[in-house]
Image (cartoon, rainbow, N blue to C red; front, side):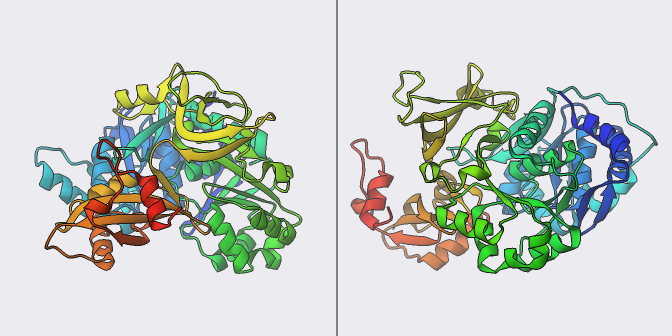
Length: 513
């Protein structure tokens, strides 16, 4: 199985003049990417990066970020993508979790990084802060000429992708070069990403997401095709990017698709001319949306998939021919070629269940994670006998189509983002007026799910939804802020015999089911 360094070398030889990355900050060919990445890899090694060291990166969807990813991968460092939507508190936790000795930052995010580093220093002044390399300094790191020696093996770690956990703290998923290549091959073989002769993939999902980095950028890079990096999603800009760059396909969450359809973006002549395939997932895609897209874009194909970062990320997929099949409406599809999946019982009996029964999706194959960074216990709980336990519940029919039902852990998927209830609850408990808090996900056709919170206030204290929202915005990213607050007396909250809040009963009581 190839490494990113292998693909860099091969693409430089096969397609030296073909554009590899295009973005708001320029365009580079595969030949140029190789030369610049080899120079950066040597520079990072000279700066002290050793095999297996984490290199933090705080950057958007830019050519700069894409080149940094390739150079870091060749250096044998672990590309660690920080979420630029994080609040400073969250970024501080991510920097500490990754243990990065170097953080490369785009200029526009420097103040956010400064705030995070200040938080780390204030908490523990004995902690060594990472060396910060600003965007303009990266050019000074590039040294030497010609191909850099490849010291990376396929099973070596390639990147850390942050996900959440049931405890509310971020975990970093370790994915290898082998895993990234396997996922790219899955996308190429099963959904044809990278197979069109003149393919130019439009990337609107951020590089700190596994869907953006691995499913889109790496897949096109492995296939030797162009990635067009869009730094900010906007309906009119989508049309302009497709027309200007002749983009042929894209991956986006269903809500983005709905926004484009509502704005009439798919009816634009340039989109009708160039666009050949839409890939979507991480949300609800219902039959009316499928019909509208297919009728509006008769010359384009529509694909849906399910996955999670720990799986590398893709697990199952629906083909274009499945989209209007009423028997699989609501299905997340069948397993990819290089993925093996099964449903395991949730009754503690450790058995594979029969079609039609509800069970936990378990996955194995070359694309799954190596483990959680610096969390061997969590890794051992999640990967058992080579099988990744996803924590997601589903049924499967006789043909192998999976139907997602719920999550074992309290995770909300809102607008393509994973939101963890405990994390928000913990933040609410920091407010002096909050006695008790419960956060739940409620179905929302636009966002998949929306975040709502139930709060009990301390006697003699007051707070309203506006105050709590403003408070949470100092602790959390905006997409984690509850859309609605309900206030109840603690004595009115439904509880189990052990005194724990029963959230499903709470949602029923409030009419939120």
